[in-house]
Amino acid sequence: MILDNDNLMPIYVQIAEWLENEILSGNIVSDEKIYSQYQLAEMFSINPATAAKGLNILASENILYKKRGLGMFVFLDAREVIKEKRKTQTLKTLTLNLVIEAKRLDLGEKEILDMVSKVIQESREG
Amino acid sequence: MKVIQCDNVTKSYKKFNAVNKLSFSIEENTITGLIGRNGAGKTTLLKLLSGFLKTTDGKIKILNEDPFNNLFVSSNTIFIDENMNFSKQLTLDEILSAAKGFYPNFDEIMSRKLLEHFSLTQSKKHNELSKGMTSTFNMILGIASHCALTIMDEPTTGMDAAVRKDMYKIMLKDYIENPRTILISSHHLEELEDILEYILLLKDGTKYLHMPIVDLKEYAISFRGKVEAVNSLIKGRKVLYEESFGKDSIYLVIETNNFQEDMSEARAINIDAKSVSTNDLCIYLTNPKQGGINYVFSKE
Image 1: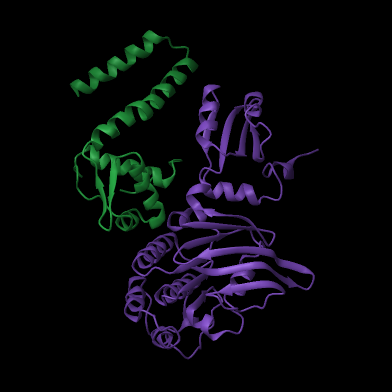
Image 2: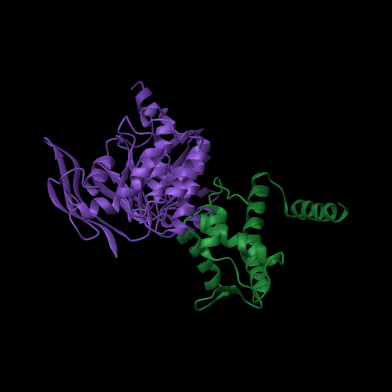
């Protein structure tokens, strides 16, 4: 994967999100060792210190744990923690932006909800 | 351990202070980007650190010793720029063989592989190379030398975009395998920033900023929206850049201590808030005039 340089998110946040996605998709499972800062640095062509910052975010959020001298591993309930975090943060922000844009367009609550249900339906059928 | 220590360093040319009371230090095994506008003092600083120039005032310590006229520092430091002089008699191949004698850690095998990778003919002479190829060769020499302190002044001058990208990747990969202290100046911050750990920003010969590059991303915030609403968000803080556009709208960049808080506050009143790219931020911070180029064209 190539990092998105136009993305205004700091690189280390993008690294943390990418690792979360790897955990969510099951590519890395509970109690498995996750990439080291040096592996990440090579994969994404970034400074190892930046990669370490991405890993440390996940450690501070109890998604990863450190084993002395062995590296970082995935917590047992990491997937649940990530899902909960994404629900309360990422999804909330997306919803907020949706509501702001709808307000700009003078759309009411019902019209927003209708649009959302329509998209859900379409994705089911698709 | 600190590899570079500068204490109140000044370098004057006649009455002009190219470097002016500059103090900073750089830790071992880090990559630092030296950024600044033309004439900010970057090259003078790098030449002082490499021991090519003598300070007018102040103290420099490289690996704990004064770099000027110092063989220990010379053998542990390499300075790469576009004016490197090599004997006109020597082929690229012979220069690489000779380099091993000067730099004990020189990785000859890698240097030859890199020549091949960038399609440089070993039997060519250094002064027969094009501008971009000269830079490519010099940078290969700089990377392969594996010096404790590697200093590069605008090393990518003349290289095409593909070569620049490859070169930074190679430098990073080699740094991961052979950690050392690297100081590199460039005008292409957007190409370099991902591999940096620190940034040192010079303005008028003095230090403007020296911080981890990841922190720079949250150093400032930009607002875009109606003048009145945007102005209400400034709250006495330093405006780094402003530009009006559209009908009474404004784009404003200010310093911030709490990026997230400022972001949500702006969004609550319907103002578009974003982080500022490192490259743009450095331009704003080092701009002699605020407000961009519009004043040049103003008829008033």
